[in-house]
Length: 508
Image (cartoon, rainbow, N blue to C red; front, side, top):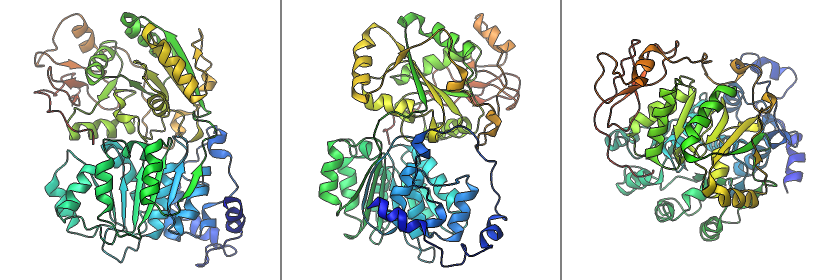
């Protein structure tokens, strides 16, 4: 079916004249296009049927948003999913991390929205708050010329604010299941005429943690709704859900292999007490644009972040026990290039797209293939190159073997020297994201003083400051017992993060 559909679409022309002779140059020439991304891409995103976005007969205003966002032509998952989703048919799509799944469901969703109807017309569910923020931003960016109102809502934010916003026109709601159910149950979010129900990272959303909530949410939708599921892995729970709640879904499976081709994977056998020293060596040897470092527990996240800053490197951290405002700030600033390194738990393994990340380090090796796959998928986004380094101790050897077997991949021993062409962008400044190029770090005087056991003058006892960088004018500080974002410095090295840590939050 897909081959026949592709042949038909290649001959498709738009009814509003956008494909008439000379018309393309007219409206396209007025677009505010970003710099062209000339980085090498792998077959994960280049092995297409040759379709263009114009072949999908999309509204011109939507095409404008697509091109102004930097999209040039659809990736394989977009070629497969967009034309089918536009027909209103249920879609069950499986594709690798970082190959354009988000746009594959956002584009048809935006196309089918009627901005003149002031009702919720699409619900997009994601498992984490950070992914909700990112997905809502994609909707706003691609649909900025359409006059469509997008609302994001998650746990940890003000319910009163959500109720107030829903009093106005909202066309698309993006959020985590618990908060959406809360709003629907209070009759604040009216989903009775919402024709589109979308789940990203469907394998996680259909785990035992979320499935009861998802089933309840479906009851608020009309029976003839369109259901679209997207994920990199489809366990049995997805099939069971599909059998119960989807009608003749169009199945897409682009997973001929599980791992991204552009990611080079290495492991290093390291004793636990030598891991920080090994990490310091990696920082000094690798050419890192931005890196994400994963730990298996929230406590280790904070401890490692402290160690990294003591070594003199800029570092943020994020985990599920932090307050939502702090998590949002970390995610926003790291995405915008304020800091080079981010230490986190598995909170950020799902769908997070930061193009500037070229190195992922598993400081703690994951226990299963699914977690490993999602972690290393934070680099090598959209067919670009990336590097994954795993620090392995004796207890991890069986997990290493099992993950290699389950994913059908080989993780090589780390060589004495890693070829930069495997993961380094020649011109990092050309990455099509608002990434500030961070200068080489050297330990600040304040850090040196702290590492020697001193306390920076004017700073509360128990605090510590991270690497200061010239572009943000200050350091990051963390309260001695606080579990949150390091407060902004004032340029003198005095962090303003303090106070007690927040209570434990739910994962959503």
